[in-house]
Image (tube, rainbow, N blue to C red; front, side, top):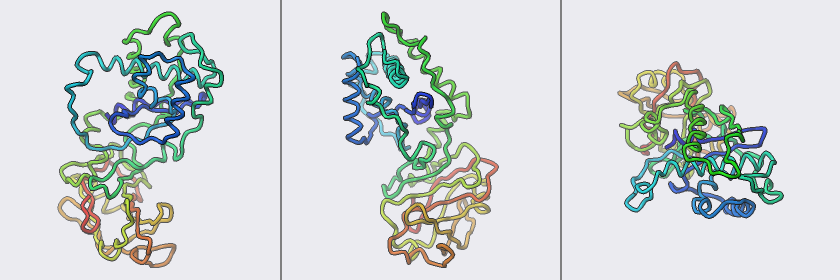
Length: 347
């Protein structure tokens, strides 16, 4: 699912297009203002009843924002009453997504005509023009920890950025004013876009399913996140705790990182720097004794330096909310992380 969704991102800077699809039915949080804006968009469109009944497919794309999609374990659902057994669901999905994209790009381009019928005057104002901050490339939260006490963060993205492929609104392939585009044409249009992404250095769906981000913090050392690409200097992975760890420096003097890759353990032992922060902006560099164990790197008796002063983490009464494991040199191969322990907390 994650690999597929990343190929369903669409950008065109000339149009102010920067959007992506997400399955809202899998669970989503959305600001109330986004719902109000979508109602305004519907009011200015000429969507017919069948389209409105599957409005969630339009809602996701018409936000004109890249969705924040967190990696998580999938839970099976009862599909006995689903419509997937009665009709070709993928034809429906591709048809509605393609229609949503043609309508969105038409409105953003200012031509104002979709399927031969105009949006209302000023409809473009109902669509967000600027990309939300932080921008897509600066979003580093990838997954929640299985114990719900932290978020897993990394600036290592296994997928190409949305800007790698430009969505071009080729009106010659859009639905005409007198006929409805066949389902296969809709599918061909989107699958051609997917293919352009997958022609880049794009991980296979099976790799993503086996080695996605949440496997680093699922409290199971037999499952592992793999970076897919080697790490650059300054690349990091780490944790953002939901509640500050007031006792981190006093009781949690040990941090351990597990991997089954010998190359990862060597790289972590040679190049990894541990950093801690109260606010995610100002960082303290931590030092301590590092030792190799069977399948892990263990750091003991951590001490941190704050702006040139020797201050133990426990002396900051606000507590530590961010931990970062940063590479001071590039790695020759991708890394693998199977688990992290902070004090008595196994993640």
